[in-house]
Length: 204
Image (cartoon, rainbow, N blue to C red; front, top):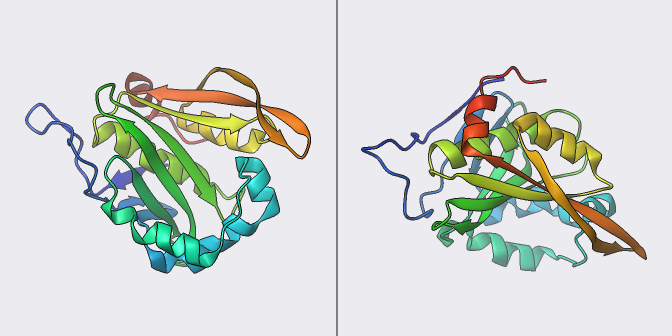
């Protein structure tokens, strides 16, 4: 699988940006990642109201369309994070979002998360979207480390992250209390040298 970005990788003459206010559009084979907007809320709403999606992401809160519109209306103005809509190239539909957040410029690190609407799992969309945004983080934003957390009852997501090159760092025991059950969270990360070594491998 190959993926390209509209942004250029930083070089000695073009250092990593000191701001993330420039929101990119990233092009893959199956998906396009573009800046998310308030207009994406109707398409994204099922991912916030789906019970299984809430369980897999450990989301205890409730969301309504008005609140989500307020949130997404301001994403373009946020520095230190990138909120990109995942668009299915075949249909032109917004099918999720991929996010780099918690940017720590001093340590060249950030966190990653992704959420897809119900009915889109198992098609490789999440894997490609993850690969696109992680690649942008290393190649255009000059990051050294990107990390995430995945709950023990979500092995499908863990496999997708491993395909992109994320490695397990450890386990946060009983990190989530979900309907009376305490669930471990696995901490995963990928470093820039690992990304460079992994990106040339065929997608599996």
